[in-house]
Length: 277
Image 1 (cartoon, rainbow, N blue to C red):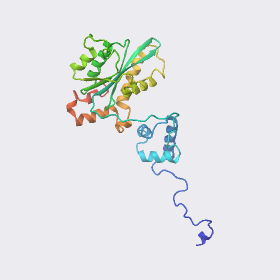
Image 2 (spheres, rainbow, N blue to C red):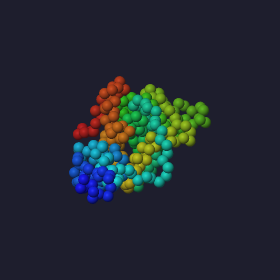
Image 3 (tube, rainbow, N blue to C red):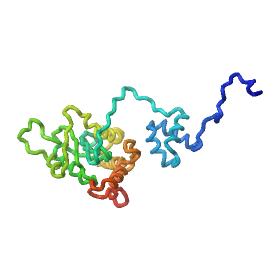
Image 4 (cartoon, one colour):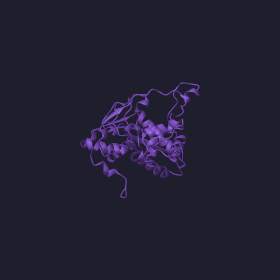
């Protein structure tokens, strides 16, 4: 009673620690987390995947509480309204989006052919000097040879590299369609003047450009080709994606192989980079 007489309020006082602190993370580990979040500005899950190799006992909940204690649990809003997101219709692995983009080096202009699986997010890219139908056909052949599972559908725009124009009434069957027919692949086209229909590969184009030609200078085409190969390999085998629930594209493919081996031409483990690759 003597304590209560000296108080100005009858409300209960907090019984927890005066300074909130983690029982899981050390002060040094919290400093690493805070510095990484402020520098990288990555979402919660991406921060978790990036920091777990350094802090193995880090969990999603302990990371979230750490960010809350330091007032950085929410990323700063980006100017401009965010467009409404629509979920893609789910398909089994083997549905590829294909597109072409233009890139530059000191040696001149190149055309970047990119393909990405709608489900596994497995990506494949090549650089070509020309963007004609023969280059597109060869890119499709190479894609079929690289992917360890059967491709059942490809989605492209209406460019002359992928299909005949509406005015080409008497043209021969397009070579891109011939390769699709030979391999049992359905070739779908986006709506005319609707590039966002192929948004997945458009986004991948931007990701590749941001990591290569928009960030570095290349003296020649071979230098860009080497960096492109390294980036695609790092993406497929090392990039953990939230849409795949924290798996890399390669890990997702291996998981699909255990569930649906009939869709695969070969064991995807043979595609794992190592000493003999």
